[in-house]
Image (tube, rainbow, N blue to C red; front, top):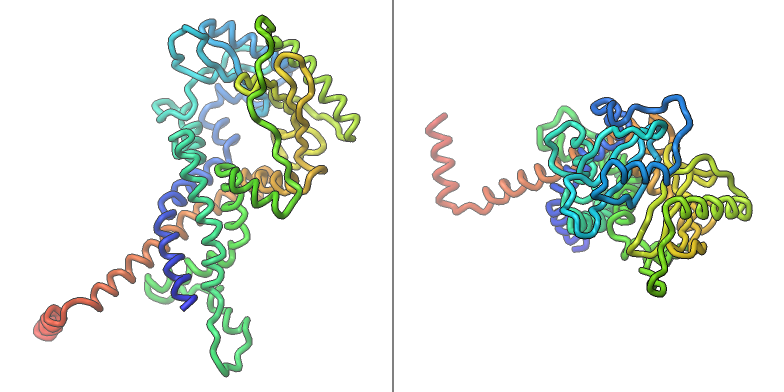
Length: 406
């Protein structure tokens, strides 16, 4: 009774999420090599490291605003060595922009290009941004993110359902030990029929990759359905959520900090926190002007980061006063934050070097193959059930046809 219910649940969940997992699996395989592919197909946008002193975020923000006087900078991202991403928005009263990203050389400040991130690609520089947006939001912005969040939650639950279905059934007085009866579930009989090979691959592949499947499923919930992830993680671990609510506006006439002021204050505040909390700063990563929240967010790569690239050590300061509002350390503080950091870095193939990066690329293809094999198994069983429940007259006619044709 319980097993039959689990089979139906696994079948329904698999059919609902299979198409989505095929998309995110294949796009994720490409994103595992995000830097390499970007540098390969668009070396003009991603020239890589080169000699010279890198400009700071404030200078690059001003440079982008000078290049696009009808817009203002909102974010400066320095995670890709040699290239700065400057996110832009139209000035009040100005017509909509045909772009939202300006790419600058971090040493010279020269413009490398501009594009609208995530649009359907008509130029080679738009290919990987579209793949990225397709992966995390089905290229649909917030609605797509919510859809994939629900898919990830179903996927997480189905990981446990699928695992339970691989366990051997009780055999009464069978003398075989548990692991001896479970062993066939881990194997693929390659000499069998196409259906048998698919069934074995679906079951055994899911078992061998079960831990990684669960990591990717749950980390996807973290990235797309925080309302669920934060509550579950907070139940088991120390996981405080930062206050991201919009702050009240100051008295009329008070001006927000300029880019230069914000950068100076933020870098000083970060240095103070590094001394107080005993970590070292390696390089700046980003400065975001989050007007809707009333904050500047400043990020660096520090000794608390575990990823091999980028950085997630950050602080928030008040956009008007420079007051320190929040400190975010990726590791070494709250246990839930440390676990979340590991999930994020494992998901993005940002740990364990090129070997893990290749493994993640292959894993994405395997996720797509496992999903497709599940649909194939369902389809073959559906055909078999249809033939079994066909009217008797149709089966007699089919049998007579077989006899006469032989």
